[in-house]
Image (cartoon, rainbow, N blue to C red):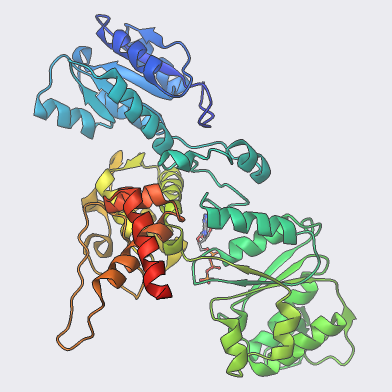
Length: 490
Ligand SMILES: Nc1ncnc2c1ncn2[C@@H]1O[C@H](COP(=O)(O)OP(=O)(O)OP(=O)(O)O)[C@@H](O)[C@H]1O
C-alpha cells in the first residue's frame, strides 16, 4: 500500500473508529478530495489498526483519539509513517489535548462540528508537502508529472532525487537536467559555472554517468585544495626521483581517467604555468609525467568547474584565453539557491529524510514558521549550507516536527550573513530597510518594482503565486508592470 505520489494516483486511507463518527467524517472528506481515494479501511481495534498502519503505511489516516490510552501511540505511528497525513478526531476539544495531539505528530485535530470540505483541501495540500515521490527517470518524471508537477499545488511535492542525485523541480533546474541530458553523449569539454555549493560536482558526475564513458573512471581533482607545486604531478603523474619525495613512479589523474572523465574542479585556481601544460595536453591528448621526456596518449573527456566569472578571469589575465576557448565548449551555469526558492523546501525535506535515516532520528516535517524561514533565507552557501543546517538540526534535536527554536541562530535572527537576496515571499516576516542620513532615496515606484520583481523571481515568474505572497491581487502586478514600462518608455 506504500504510496506512489503523483497528483492523480489513488490515495490509501485508514481509519480507527469506535463509534462511527470518524468513519463518517473520513468518507465525507475522501468524497470531497480532488485526488482519487481508495475505499477507506476501517478498524475498531487499536492493536490491529496500529499494526496494519505500521506495515502498510497508508497515505492518510484518521484516528479517533477518544479511545486512545495515550498520545504516545500517535507519536510512534507518526515516526513509523513519516510521509503519511495523520488526522486526529476528537469528541470535544480542549487546548491542552489539542496541543499534545499535535505535538505527538498529528497534522490536524478536528472536533465536531466537522468541515469535510475544508479538511479535504487541507489534506490535499498536506499530501503534496509530506509525501515523497518515487525515484523516476527524469524523462518519465517530467512527462508524467511535467504537465502538472506537484509544485503546482503549492506544496513540497517530490522529495526524492529528480535527476541523477539532483533534487528540485524548479523551471531553472528542469532546464539544467535537459541541458545535461543533451550534452552528456558528446565528447566535447564541459565548463560548469556557479557559486560554491550549487551542485557543480554533482553536475559533472551526472554528465559522466549519462555518457558512454560511464563504465570507465570519473576522476576529480580540486585545483584549490592541492598545493601549486604538487598540482602538475597530481594531474600528469611523475617518474621515480622526479622531485624530493617522489620515491616511486605514479600515474596522474589524467592517466587514471583514461577512457572516462577528468573533472577539474576550481579550475580558476590553476597557475598560468600549469594552464599551458593543460592546454598542450588537450591539444595532443599526450600525458607527460613530471620528469619524463616521452608521453603516452590517453582518451579523456574534460569537465571543469569554477565559482569565478571565467570571462572576467580571462580579461584580467588570470586565465589563458586559448585554454578558455578550448574548455568552454559546452557551458552549464548552475543558479544560486536564492534564485530558485521553490526548490528550498523540497531540498530541505530530502535532507531531513536522509539525515534522519543516517542519524536514526524521527523528524518528518517542518512547522510552517520554519518553512517560512527556510524559504526566506538567502543561502549564500547554497545547497551545501542548507544540507549542513538540516544535519545540524537533526543531530542536536529530537521530535517529529522541526520547530523554530531548533534552527541555527543565523536562520532565526533577521541578519543576512552576506549580500544575498532577502526573500520577499514570507508573509509574516517584516522587511527592514534602514535609510542612512544623506543616502540617496530610491523613488517609491522603483522600490515597489524591486520588491515585486524579487517576488516574481522567487516564484519563477508565476504572477498568481507572487501576488499571493505579497498579499496583493495579480491584477495589481499587471497594472504596475504596465506603468513601469510606460514610465521607462517616456
Ligand atoms: N540540486 C541538488 N540536489 C541535491 N543535493 C544537492 C543539489 N545541489 C547540491 N547538492 C549537494 O550539495 C553539496 C554541494 O554540492 P557540490 O559539491 O556539487 O557543489 P559545488 O558547486 O561543486 O561546490 P564547490 O564550488 O564548493 O565545490 C553536495 O553534498 C551535493 O550533493
